[in-house]
Structure formats: structure tokens, C-alpha cells
Image 1 (tube, rainbow, N blue to C red):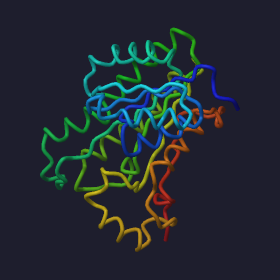
Image 2 (image 1 turned 90 degrees about the horizontal axis):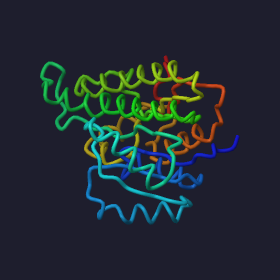
Image 3 (image 1 turned 90 degrees about the vertical axis):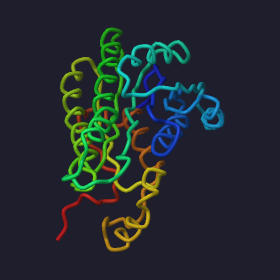
Image 4 (image 1 turned 30 degrees about the horizontal axis):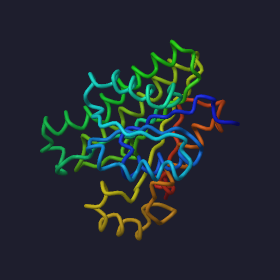
Length: 256
């Protein structure tokens, strides 16, 4: 199935890690790629050059914090002014706890920070984008980047698990609501992916993977997630919405 005629995509948190892998994959598919992050624009110029070299007809960076709800409408306006009408949204931006604490010691400040960035922000950005899609009749696609932590409990970062469990339900809610408007909504659920976010626990997961954590005993790569998102935005699973695509090497298979 061909990519929709409206080929501008917004990827939140697209400057590094999984987000960068997603942007690269979509650039190769010929999407005009807009991405956000918290760094100053001057620090992302090389990423813009790389996306254009990969095939993006246009690429633009917008300094933005998804947790700031007031910024959502101006962000969408700026993206469309720079690159054209939006045809897809990828909610990728997310944070991990600054300090991993047992759930007995989780602080309200950390809980609010995680829920604000990982769940509340993407939910309302989706709302803002979906209203535009519905008003314009755009047959768009929305992808939420979740985590195996939506169902795999980590007692040292409970607030992260809760935020990702919320993303899973938000995906189903939006899919159910927007299907009649021709808008498909998916969750891509990564497992253990080698990024700077997982850098501090690399030794732990090296050991767990060697001990059989996942049937495919290797670290995932950002490009593994990027290929899955590209497939969904191409429309390869057109008769599908509200579904979860696990990119986890089989980690979440129940095994005896």
C-alpha cells in the first residue's frame, strides 16, 4: 500500500535514541520529518542534514516540551507552516526516573514528572492533532511508543511502568474514537533497546540477556523500532487499529 499523499510526520523526542531511529526510517520512506526535543536548535543541525541525506524532502526541528500543554497548538501550527499539512503523529518523547527508587520510596515529584511527560503530554498532543485531522478529513496515522514496562513490573521504577500502562490504554481509546474518521492508532512497544536512556543499566541487561531474558538474545536497536513505525505509517496494516506491535525480541512471551 502506498504512503498517503500527506506525508508530513511529527515525531516527538526525535533527536536521539529510539526517536532518531524512527525519524531515520521515515526519512528513507520519503516523509517530510518534523521532530521535537529540548535542546537548542543549533545542536540539531547535523541531524537535519542526515535526514535530508536519507531522503526526507524536508526536515525541521522544533524545541518543545510535550509536557507543556500550552505549546501544543503553536507547535502544530509551526510544523504545518514549515512542512505542510500533517499526516501522521508519533508520540515518542519520554523520560525515565532521575533516580530509580523502590515503590515504597517513590516520590510525588518523580511520579508527576513521569506521568506529565510520558502520558499526560502525549494524550493531549494527540487530542490537538486528532481534532485537526477530523476537521480536515485527513486519513492520518498516530503511533504511540510505549514499553514492555506497560505489563512487566519493575518495582524500582513504578512510575515509569504506570505511565506506559496508561499509554497502552490511551492507544485503545483513541483508536476506538477515531476509526470512524479514517484515523488509525497503534502502539509500538519496545523491549530492551540500546540507547542513552538504558546506558546506566547496560551491565544489568547484558547479564539478563545472556541468561535468557529474551529468545532473541540481543539488545534491540533504534532502527528496529523505526522499521515498525515505518510499516504502520505506510499503511501495511490498513485493516487494523488499536493494536500493539512488540519490538522486544520475544521478551514478553510467557515461557516455561
